[in-house]
Image: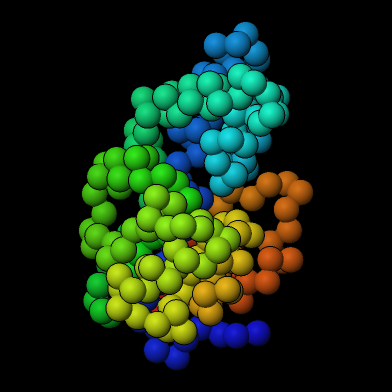
Length: 225
């Protein structure tokens, strides 16, 4: 099993469920969409565990509607419309992440974000969070031909950050994140504190390392106690 790079130059994060906890916003959105259709609320944890699967999966979850349904796209767009109304209102960095970013700055370690969240939603969220130090690279699906699990996003991150994938780490809470990192030649860390579905098994993802609490990342990456 590959360990951390001897000379760590950059750390790249998935966004939702790894760097930022946005799930409560999606809970509000899914419940609102259900209410518009006269449906009872779902268990919040069920919604939270599906956030990493994106708007299509949340639309299906909210309305028990397959993507093949003629009205699906209209309902997906309505879900996204509802999301824009709450985007960034309760989202926050996971515990310990701000201290970790500060430690990166002290050690001249660059950091970035690779997300499948479209830029139209990523940029307003990051603007509201006003991260400091700011990420040196933010790659969204709009920026690449092939989104994760293809490694193209991570290669672009590395170009922005002027680092090699071999000296970089990618952290994510979904199997596609780990696959993308592995295909890019990076050390991968599975963030099992993120949005993991009940049936999923992070042990099967093939990550180099796992972390079950965001506050443990600093010790894992930097050896800080």
